[in-house]
Image (cartoon, rainbow, N blue to C red; front, top):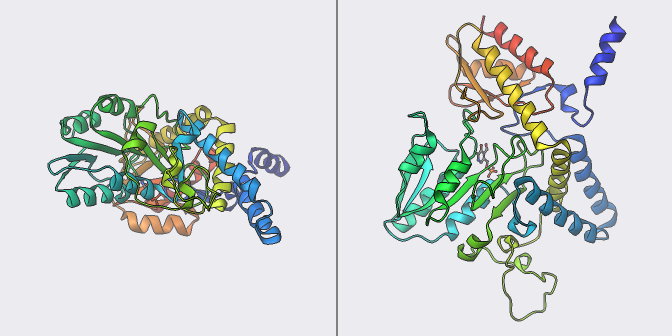
Length: 387
Ligand SMILES: Cc1ncc(COP(=O)(O)O)c(C=O)c1O
């Protein structure tokens, strides 16, 4: 009997994800553990550098090109030329905010309670230019898109949203927002960090002008590397804020007298690339695309349905995440009436159930590979801790 149980555990264990053996990891909306193939890709580059210096640099350049192509494939960008590889989501959003150019009296529209990365750059931009930042309560009614679009007018220059809200996982209908912005002066800018890698996203179908997302959450990559998409037309309008050799097409020609920034999105990359990060992101994109975003998102949403249903059935619990399909994501946020979420969070962490505390609530964010037994065990523990 013991042998049988042991065998069942072994066959269901996915050796790409050693984290499963260590703990119950429900925190991909904060920081993902690196899958084995991603860790191996980074370690291999470290080894190459340690033993051989720049000998394999041409290979690293090929990985960089492939990484851009995979990133374009993931979001259905028209071309790898539309992708820049930057440090993080904030850098991408700040690049747009710094380059967009406003007049006094213009306005910018964002949801209220955004993560600071998609709020501070716009606030700074508005303050600097005598423009108005309109922060819209998207949870007040039943139609967040209508609330955002109603706040826009012919002086709106930017509509910037998180595809999925970090606190409760509310997912916006990007296609509706993008269609409304298309042909208008407003630039449609998306912080996609809580969506990419968990749920599919198509920048063309959603008429997205620019998008930024770090690798270290649902994309299962390392910190310090992000993909930044900028539509070709917008690249002509966004002024440059940083300058360096890497933004040029023929970038290893250091002896030139004249220069033009690349027409591609590489124009937003000033200097030496983060090759370790790129090696990791390349490996994680390969893993995700091989697995298939349809299959991944089906599993992510199945986790969410399961957790939401189970927590609903528990006495005294309240799920703060959306219930309607189309609004759900990989995030499930909840609290218990009689229990302080801060102390519940500490006890969960002590028991190796990696969770996040957001506001006065627990946020869980399992990924597609998270075993169902882990969700069951986490629920049992929460029940015990709040009894
Ligand atoms: C919606 C959202 N945007 C951005 C970030 C992080 O930004 P960056 O990639 O610049 O660290 C987070 C992290 O929690 C987030 O939830």
